[in-house]
Image (tube, rainbow, N blue to C red; front, side):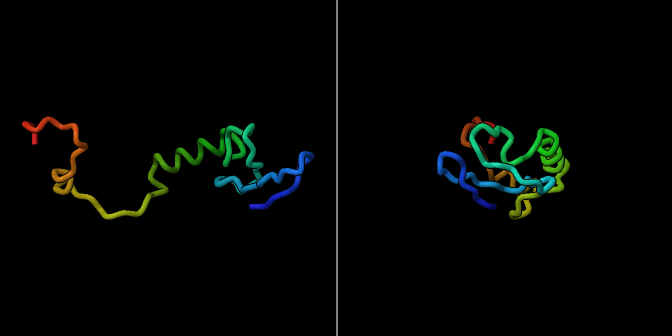
Length: 78
């Protein structure tokens, strides 16, 4: 991440696109941030969908799911 001053003396933060590593200005008008393009955004989404990326956590078995409720299940079904 780097910063550079702009005309209003505010610093513009620059980050690297998570997909292609090209520099991206972190400004409000950039609706794709932190990505540089729709293409990079979709590549990242595809990686999550195909489980190339995973959030670490305790493995869950179907037996564990019986103990987990969302709080809105019908009590007669439990």
